[in-house]
Amino acid sequence: MTHLLKTLFANPVFTGGFILMISGAVMALCRRVPAMLWVWTKRRFIITADVLGEDQAFQWLKIWLDAQPYSKRVRDVSISTGGYDCGPQSVPSSLPTSPVEPRRPRIIFTPAPGIHCFLYKGRVLWLNRERKEVPAQHGGYSTFREVMTIRVVGRSQEVIRQLINEAMEFALPPEDPRICITMSVNGYWRQVGLKQPRDRESVVLNAGVFDQIADDATRFLDSEKYYTNMGIPWRRGYLLHGVPGSGKTSTIVALAGALRLNINILNLASWGMSDEKLNEMLVDVPERSIVLLEDVDAIFDGRSLTEDTKRSSVTFSGLLNALDGAAAKEGRLLFLTTNHVDRLDPALIRPGRVDLKVYFGYASEEQAEAFFLRFYPDAPSDLVREFAFRVCETSVTMAEIQQHLLNYRDDAELAVEMVEEVGAGEKFSMSAV
Image (cartoon, rainbow, N blue to C red; front, side):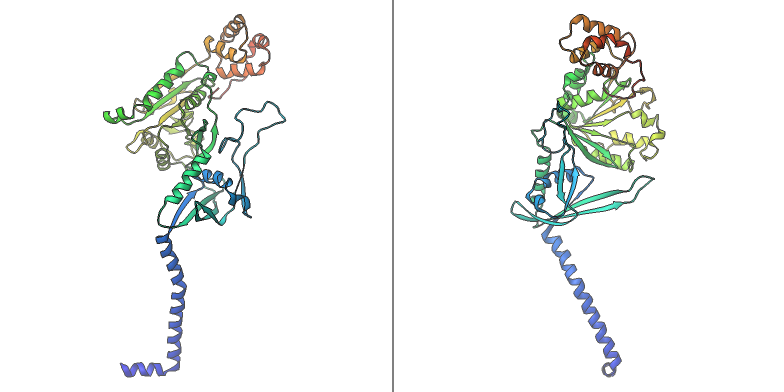
């Protein structure tokens, strides 16, 4: 064996090939060692956090970064508009009285895609922002998906947790009276704005209707321990049904403002929605908030998807399981609205899924009088009664009355004189005043 090795190494061709092989192996090892060391170092000494662009935390980070000194001196920036009602309330909530002073959208400046480095609480943080194009699916449009990756040296998540909490508090100050509106977009919750609470008095309903819903919701929110002791899932469902334009959605917005509840608008017809996604999204809904599913009859006719929602892959059984299945979220208020309750499958609105049903019909004289006085608080009582009597001679909705009073908002007598116009045109197809 020794003689054979001596013979091989005496051969210059073999010796050269062997040296070349060893050199290649050493060079390959030298290339891999730094990468392996970097992976090993990251796993043990660097905390990494990803924030997806579809998540609300991404919007919080954008608003927070816009206020940081680093964003004001960085050379590569991304510019976006967050709406004048997003972020800390720095813009007056009241609408401008003069057309020469329009409200303008908020412009947000954030570091552009790439790697950025800045200080936070005395620690060095690396921010890597990536933007990738997502190909179109099911005949839709191609979109961009963004990810922010935050890295910090250390073995504790505390710094990153503090940063995200600070960004949330900055974007959604606890003392801010506005309610947060989020909407399901492509299978994710996305914050679409902050809304001033609607005055309860601005929703004109028949006596006791609003109080019935508000008292029931308040009692439910205060009964977590009772539900737990009774072994009953802590969930509450409401069905607001009736004619279009009767104030269903307005009531929900006013209720959210009165009880300081955020609203999560669920769109089952959006791209990417499936039974699995629906379950995930409803599980992610915070406790003590409202889930709103509007015009549910336009989504399911019985147990079948309507023609307008064929692009969705949500099934009727998937919806039922998401609402009150074994993994369904507790501590939330579910509101369904419909203009055609007869089209809904009984399984969707049975007790346990829908606990309170409230009918919203055509305007009554009581509602017409109250609405008239909101527009003309100094109107004489005989004029108020005359308007209410005349306008309610036919079936009209509160939306139609509102539109009429807006048309004649500067002249109460003319509004009464032209009352025949109410409901004379094309009927509204809206579901809220």
